[in-house]
Length: 89
Image (spheres, helix red, strand yellow):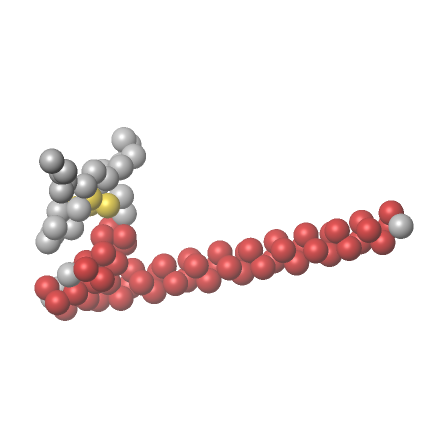
């Protein structure tokens, strides 16, 4: 018989934040807020919707910063290899 219980891994030093609707644990409140907005959006009240919007905006800003850092690293790597090649040959 298969169990329908899903196990989630939470770091031992973290205090989990549970979803108020399905009691799924999350390490960060921001992740819980995004989950509530995506999975339980119809059950969310106005303050919760504001928290969801803030969490999604925060994730977008972090992703945008990561992409910028990744592009800068690739550009530096490209020009570093280009200059190395021009010096060696």
